[in-house]
Amino acid sequence: MSDTLSTHLQPAAFGRVAVLFGGRSAEREVSLKSGAAVLAALQDAGVDAFGIDVGADLLQRLAAERIDRAFIVLHGRGGEDGSMQGLLECLNIPYTGSGVLASALAMDKLRTKQVWQSLGLSTPRHATLASVADCEAAAAALGFPLIVKPAHEGSSIGMAKVGNLDELVAAWRAAGTYDSQVLVEQWISGPEFTVAMLRGEVLPPIRLGTSHSFYDYDAKYRADDTRYQIPCGLEADKEHELKTLVARACEAVGVRGWARADVMQDADGQFWLLEVNTVPGMTDHSLVPMAARAAGLDFQSLVLAILADSCEARS
Image (cartoon, rainbow, N blue to C red; front, side, top):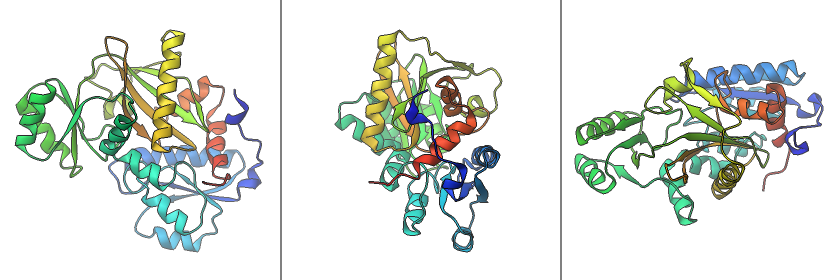
């Protein structure tokens, strides 16, 4: 385990910590589980931590409580998109994870892809959908199969793999119930990898396997047959290539503290960046804790390392 991944701070050094979880996004269910796990780990470590299920009374709660720092475990909009980070900045409360700009950028899949493309980082060809005509144009330009996704959701919510125009139109309409902006991407056939970053270091990649058509919400949080391969099975040079790509992708977005990137590999061995999550899941099915264990950190050590980053000055 690298020394930079651990923390030598005593529990009292963190002061009173508010764990922010729940919220009102489509990922509330996952956030509740993540928040409960993080809160328990902090309290078991002796940290003076308490939980806030984020709702309409959040400002009153933050004003009423003595809070030295916040541990953000809010997934999706309202917690992972820069708005919570901005609020905490205004209140001068240190917090975990990425800042306002990186959080907002990473939450927007389209803008993230545009940044990566501008730097020559590989990401699947794509289009945005706002009409049936857009669906027809995307089908002609990209071919099938395709993957449709809301541009501002996580946990694979609203996503669908499609194989023809009728399915594409139906998936666009379904995704539009979650988000006004819908993205469609070229389907990459091959293994999927997820790679976590912690305090500037890339953790061991995980290769994902599922009986579903892709790594969807059920495969992530409910299925018992999802396979997690770590070590990931890549040759040393390809694993190095993957980790370097993820490090560059996270740097381009401005990630700090912790994050997780999802990557596909095609039949020719090329890697394709899908997205970056700046507040990844911390449930019993989650991937960052799994990668951290492979790097020598148990769950409590991982949580403390993430929290320790909030003690460092932000640029």
